[in-house]
Amino acid sequence: MMFGKKSLLLGLAKTLPNETQGKSLMFYALQRLRKNKLAVTSFVVLVLMVLAVLILPFFSPYEIEFIDWEYMSIPPNSETQHYFGTDALGRDLFARTLHGGRISLLVGIVATAVSLIIGVTYGAIAGYFGGKVDSVMMRIVDILYALPFMFLVIMLMVVFGRNIFLIFAAIGGYIWLDMARIVRGQTLTLKNKEFIESAVAIGASTPAIIFRHIIPNLLGIVVVYVTLTVPQVILVESFLSFLGLGVQEPYTSWGALVNEGAQDMEIAPWSLIFPASFLAVTLFCFNFIGDGLRDALDPRER
Amino acid sequence: MLKFIIKRIGGAIPTLLILITVTFFLIRVAPGGPFDSEKDLPPEIQQKLEAKYHLDEPLHQQYFRYLGNIIQGDFGPSFQYKDFTVTELIAQGFPISLTIGGLALVFAFFVGISIGTVAAVKQNSWVDYLLMSSAMTGVSIPNFVAAPLLILLFAINFDVFPAGGWGDGKFEYLVLPVFALSLRYIAYIARLMRGSMIEVLASDYIRTAKAKGLSMTQIILKHALKPSLMPIISYLGPAAAGITTGSVVIEKIFGVPGLGRYFVLGALNRDYTLVMGVVIFIGVMVVLFNLIVDILYAWLDPKLRVQSQ
Image 1 (tube, chains in turn green, orange):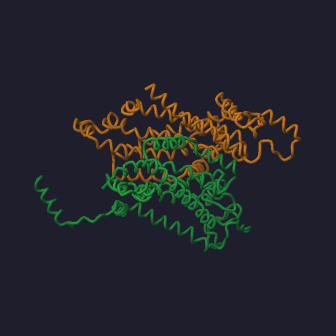
Image 2 (spheres, chains in turn blue, yellow; image 1 turned 60 degrees about the horizontal axis):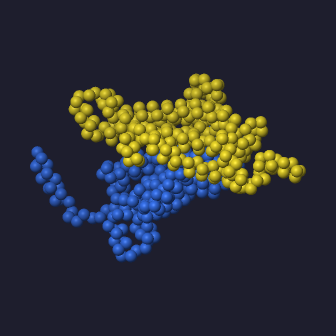
Image 3 (cartoon, one colour; image 1 turned 30 degrees about the vertical axis):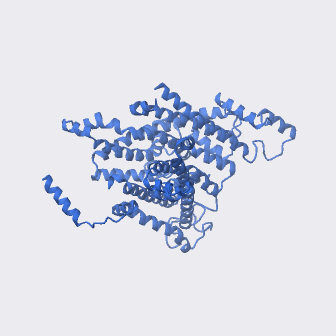
């Protein structure tokens, strides 16, 4: 039996092309990801969601601030072209939900980008230099990590007023901690590889090694965490807006809309249900894609 | 073990110090002082008020005074609730928040590990898929969405539980807030538990246990449960911090007079001392809890204990 199996495998091996083509980790990961139906579906839904919030507002006959005095708190219907109904002030929920989505997604993407830049640089530097530099840098991360961040952000809002750019900066300025930890860990394993050694040997400068050789090789893991960070950020922003401390009128976001909806839910449940489901579906998709990517990149699953 | 504990306590001090310092200076750079009311105060009164609250001292002196007061548990007077000190407000709100948060954490822990274990044992069956996709839904639904939906369903449509209020902590008043608060953490713990249980169940000593002819229940309870709890224990720290934050929202939605509600009201009314006091208080609680979790972890995992010595 054993021998039979072995020769069968050897036979199969001969049918493979002799030269193994170098394929990146990312390539295999994407191949595995494509088999994950949930992740693919989530990706499609997410693309549709992004397109919807970008394009559909142009087809809505109502502006977000327009008050329709004749139709206040009306349920969804197509005759008045209030497809998602109106809120207690007579504002069109279709337009507001989509505009809110723009803000929510924008906050998610911008704050993630901030965290990406800080976290990757910080983590790569700490990991590459190692030793004392590393332990001091990571100790700082540990200390910051233990702060009750949400409360500090709220305090920032109280002190400096509610400003959307402050929200971006505050959220991005905290979320990078996770990224820095992960990148550092990866850098530690990378820096002893031969290609880094040879880069040192040919006299490449340290910044060149970090930015040209280490960081590009971290992309796989970073992509996973980006997809998991975006929903986290969206959640934080909606949390702030829900408390009335985030995005201010005339702008709105899903969190702010859920807050308004929750106040009138007894008479107008649609004003809660539409923004809440848009928010939940988006978070759902991001989480599924992130999870799928993580599984796909996990070497144990190969 | 004692050495380990002392080391951890030493590690927590800089965190607290930074928290207090950041909070102090943030409030000091805040535009608008506490006595800027609609009408201008006569300069003498302004001076007297500032002297009373020591605002006329140099900044570093104020800082050390504040630090000293905090160590003694004195957070100063509230600007909004004139008759109360911040310490009194915290003493009023904290037990309520602790009840809801503590129950939510315990509930999430037990329900989460049960769901995760069942899913792991039935790995890749429909039970597993059903449980894990519900868990994913749970992770994706923020508590401020879940809470109003729960109210809509159980308080308004079916009228089983009250829609809000505290009712002196009677059971029916606790059910909805605790459930809404724990939902996300049940889901997260279930996912963690499934992963770690699957890993443990694949190990050699579990195979030995199976070969001995032990039943699945015995294997899980006697051999697999303790080692697979490790990631859950280390998640308890972040979970507690999350629940503290979450309870701000839950208290607002259900109208529970806890710490979180004072915090939000303080934030909206720019009651600086109250906001500051609550932030520092919660910081201390979170750091303390993390300390307990670390010690618990070291106690469960002898390897870690030896390494640190």
